[in-house]
Image (tube, rainbow, N blue to C red; front, side):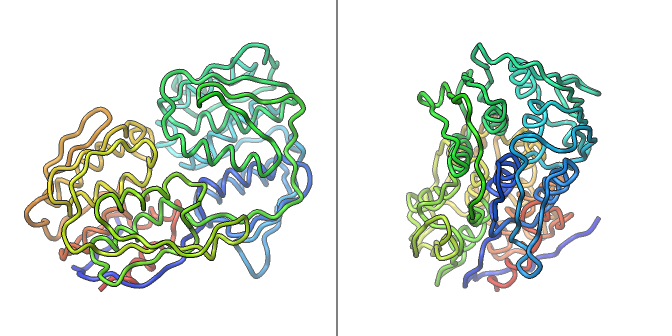
Length: 440
């Protein structure tokens, strides 16, 4: 297994430009493909997840054109809701942001498809989405284990006369996938969320992007969503992808731990449509100085930036419901190592159905660096050590966020080894290059 040895560091300073948001990139690609007209996308993330989506769309007959000089710029010729190739076997790796939305879009499209992934993807539950799609008339079979991929999809028999019920407390990607696909039927539909809807900020991203393609979804306090008949995604526009707010959290945290002169992330601002931008405001509550620069509009997100500075004293220990920042909350688990007491992160059960079981993985690896950790069904309690344990070897579980999170431990003045560092290619292939530029 490849390893990356990060030396002890004590300072972080400078600025970096964020890669595009994975959530925005893959949603925008699919919506552009489903729309009529041509959409031009700027700042698209280059990563394993977006590669899988682009490969799938190409296999389905969508015309894609990458700019010869600016590789983050793509032109997508929409198919007006009907994919030209209606019999395809798709491999989607471990890309949940491709697998779930494509499952819904293809289940309502009228073709015959098989969707597969890596073994971990076949361990990630999808029954809640499949059950909801079946209520709408979708014809989906499990090819192996009940409730999990791989899937076989056959033409549907639409039935949208009754509300479609979907659980909201497992993964917001299920609701996102359903909402994005339903307008392609041309019929009115109602979706009812059963239980608490977790990760609402990711649903807000979905609704915001659907609006950019001129499909407006109304909702009743996040419990019921309404899709109008004859909704049509319309392309013919330019869309700029914001910098990734979850990735911003690592560099902002570097500023908190060791940035006496500040660390700046460019490409995201205070008015971002991503919920994880609230990571910065949570830092402010802990006594961290945060500075916002620039302004946000559809084509100016590259002008925006956020800077975090190391506080004079240790950050305050905290007890936080993390439903509003589900991915960035992982970074807070690392910052807990530098707090002045015991920290608790709550409402993070969704971590268990990500690239790995992040709750258990985070608990195991935090203990390696000296923390006392209590793991619950939906929470972690972290008591920082008096001194971090040097030379810990961190397993990453093929999970990009585990690797990026634990790089921050080196800023506590201890060397650390990251196993399988290339797993960051899922969302941020050059993460460690950018990290090394800022630390010393």
